[in-house]
Image 1 (cartoon, one colour):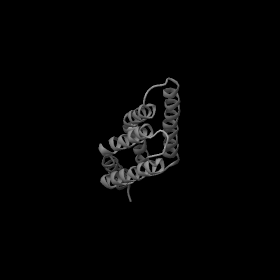
Image 2: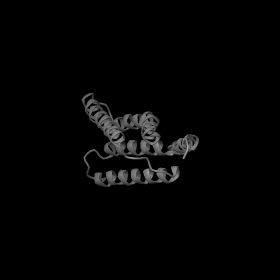
Image 3: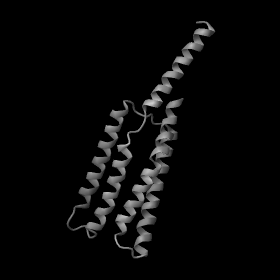
Image 4: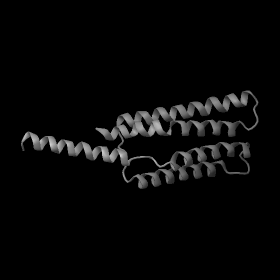
Length: 147
């Protein structure tokens, strides 16, 4: 293989990887569905604060199933799976820690302020954060495909 052929092969590889990255756009309905699920989970906490009527385990189970269905549908729509690397794993852990921090501080703060519907307001904050971070998080995950 001469240098020109090698250069053409590298350009083809680069063009293909860019094509894959462009194809890996997250559908708009994924973060919206995720935000709706999070908000509904928060609202369920205010609908039955004692946990007597609505089985809270059922609500969490439904949330997890809906989240898995959204993720699977989005991956099928994109046609590719994003690679799991140490960097994307660390990014996901940081995202989860941020969401847990907002959950804990929001729930505690709204309860301390004696605000009506504290779980719903916390769910609304988490849903807004989910929508706000959806695009930057997906772009960061796409960056793992560029290598």
